[in-house]
Image (spheres, rainbow, N blue to C red):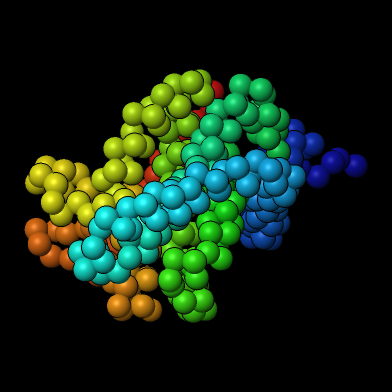
Length: 296
């Protein structure tokens, strides 16, 4: 008796070679489940690190609180309320929230570089998931940690004369999450192109201070030269501060402060500002995922 002939499609390959899966059909759901589990594991790791370092987290909140109560309290007596729509501390609060979420977002980029140097990223790449998924999980974890730290400062809104309005707190929380995502994505975009944390820190030292000063978080930029106002309109931090400030103005109209972003005298709606901020974060994350997905 002769053995049955193999199908034509299998004649050129050994019978024991596993079939190549294209991610379609019944294999699609398990593959997606593995990707989601990888993202969850990376987010969980960042939350465990946050819970295991309460002193470090508290120290990161000291500087924003000093700006809010010492700098804000000192300048409040010198700056008339009429020029800012309210007290200076209320005007400063969105900028302080920006400072709070900025630090943990930047640390995600530094940690990615150090993890690559220590070999931890090489161990992660052995997991049966795509490389961009690992970067997405890192971005999601950094965004959540930055938002949690910013949420701690939301408990101080009563100290600067703002009401504990649930809708106000919710909109500020959403605005901080959006800003945290964009900053984390931009930090990862820079981190995937660099090999040493020293270079990363040096570039941040050169870039972050001008971005903060042109964000409108500490003083109105309307009196600056035209070129500086144009830079402010292209500054992603300015859009984050603007979104937070307009969230306050929507719930507390008597504390409405002058906004930062203007396009030839036209003030874009807050939804458009939020959409642009989200778009910048998505494009930065896609580019970082593309760069991170390339074999080293």
